[in-house]
Image (tube, rainbow, N blue to C red; front, side):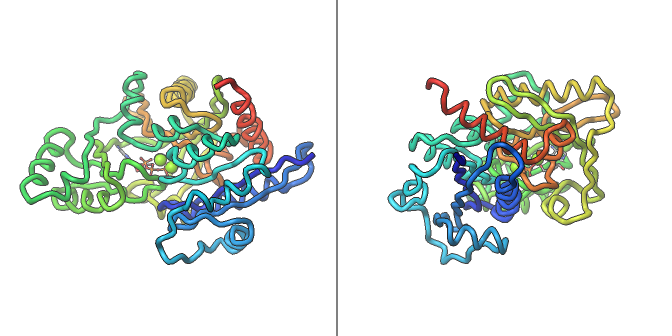
Length: 355
Ligand code: ATP
Ligand code: MG
Ligand code: MG
Ligand code: MG
């Protein structure tokens, strides 16, 4: 009997296009024959306005890679969610949504309420993994080393004229320049700026505040960027470590998604002790936020001091054939289709656990 997989993609987030690309790759792997588990794929698409669409529209979006043009007030009506219509026709859901409204526990909450098995982290792991402020608090509690940072609320940025200068004074005193300004809940570097002056800081805060109520400002480190993939539920395993190199100022959206801008080196040329350190931290990071199934953990390696700092966790990392997550597993001996297979089995195993 074929297992019916509900592939949920798109999403009301700045990473909508990335999700379409990830879903294409996963749909292709699921459709591939040649492994014992043949799957039947049911597509559900969430448009940028938050409206949900069934197989016909979803298929078209997946084929053309063109987001559905919506009029902008589609917020999902619970009674009309395709999820509800398909609840009895799906064996496992695979939400491949990046960023808010999908990677953050919201969709995981709907699926949990519906008692549907799904790939990846539950509500807590997703929410803690998405919010960089909450994530850093969990990492600190677990003893993981990270950069100095400050939590900022949008109200401080958009308030009357006397609050913002005081905030900037505090950022300059505590973190200095250069520093990174980020929306707390996003990904793909959307809304992130590296700033070197008061002027740039004010602009960056205003820009980040347009994406999220919660912002984070971090001291900048000069370091190599390395990532590790984690797979599993309560006893997760770490992949080999990969490194990203690029010429741009930092690993921004264009560098991530323009072909030829970034080079991935797998495995990363690192001393054995450093690789092991990173793998151990990656597993600890997954456990610190209670992630499950899959996660990609991003690190800074300061070569001059030998220091490894954790940057962040992504509980639904980019998942195209050329994305870091599947490539790290491929280099660790697990092919793309075998990885997708394994994730579905992990989802079923979690659903079978006693609550
Ligand atoms: P992802 O697409 O991996 O989810 P993201 O949007 O969550 O990314 P981060 O990983 O936090 O964003 O940061 C994006 C990039 O910005 C990093 O890969 C790095 O190049 C740069 N960067 C972020 N924070 C720092 C920092 N504190 N010091 C130096 N570089 C940084
Ligand atoms: Mg991220
Ligand atoms: Mg991300
Ligand atoms: Mg990152």
